[in-house]
Amino acid sequence: QVQLVETGGGLVQAGGSLRLSCAASGSIFRINAMAWYRQVPGKQRELVASIRSGGGTNYEDSVKGRFTISRDNVKNTVYLQMSSLKPEDTAVYYCNADITTRRIGRDDYWGQGTQVTVSS
Image (cartoon, rainbow, N blue to C red):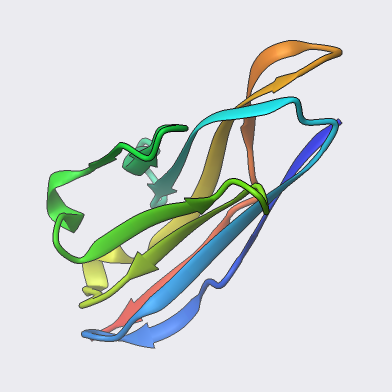
């Protein structure tokens, strides 16, 4: 059984910063790519940033230069440092990980989501 637990969401003023963390636990053999998505009511979940096992990253255009994704492979944790936050960044942020376990093999896992609210 694999679990992803997110922490770090909250309320912040425009221009402020927040750091999200997502820790994976369970019978993990290997964590491949990890990513952060976000979703607002009535819209599809969108990819914000991703990081491959080797450290390569990708960002959605609107967050480039403001958000930084990183990972700690020892702690099985992925982070999203968000700076210069804008009201349009308000969403529920979800952690996603491509994980290989010995029992199931390779599969996709999601966290429960954490609310980020940016006030103007």
